[in-house]
Image 1 (cartoon, helix red, strand yellow):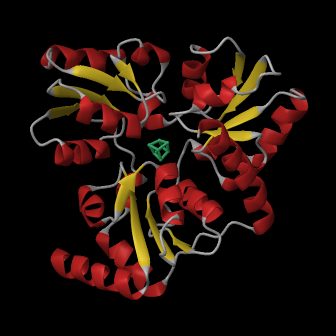
Image 2 (cartoon, protein in one colour):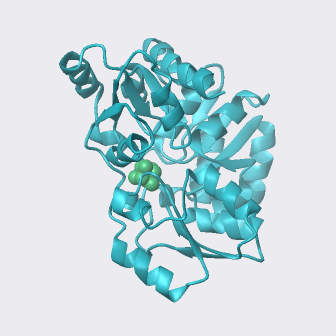
Image 3 (cartoon, rainbow, N blue to C red):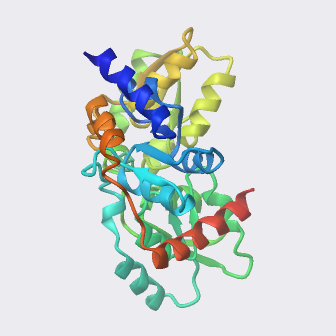
Length: 303
Ligand code: SF4
């Protein structure tokens, strides 16, 4: 049954001139069928360089919006319209406008894990891989404001002399990882080194051998001569890591690091999206242009 669905998806992908993108946190059966797996921005940028007419984004809504911002002439589908992001929903465009009014002249650096309307209100975007570089680029400002993730802001603040104000948002999956959970894994696997995502709180980052983004983690484990790793991010990434490095061992930092929204996408959802070309993610042009400006400014800084 599953292989029938997978076969039909492959056929329809060809007929529709579609590309299937899967975030690193997606379930294994989705990652296995994807044309490209990666982090959200990486995927959206790669999609722009293909001749695909349809992008099927297996991830959450803000990621499909980013794909729509960068690919205005392609049809962007999100197989599960109810796959949202609690962190992205912790701030609105009106909140960003209020921050700007409260801190006139202070650049607002917004994590790509945010809605299109929030990006449109921001000065510039950043990722977990380039936040320090983006913040440092404001040579004439001693202060910046980061949103929505407080932990990415605190991590960035550790690596810059600038004052980093921040919104109080957080990713529940990373924010609730505890020191006790990490220590228990370190005791169970003393040979393993611990990699943490900057969305984790500072006391977790203090325990890490390496703090890096999802793409950074994938690169690190591939290039490292070490054989085992404790991974402090969403557990979906363990599957891609093991697939790419079958002779290395990977342990999740906690069994609780599962994003329910990321786990929603099924093969049936992907098939239905390809059959109906729905649900389609569209960003109003006026919002898209302003959000694109914030994304492009980040790309110029970090290129
Ligand atoms: S893992 Fe966190 S940031 Fe990513 S989609 Fe889930 S809630 Fe949002």
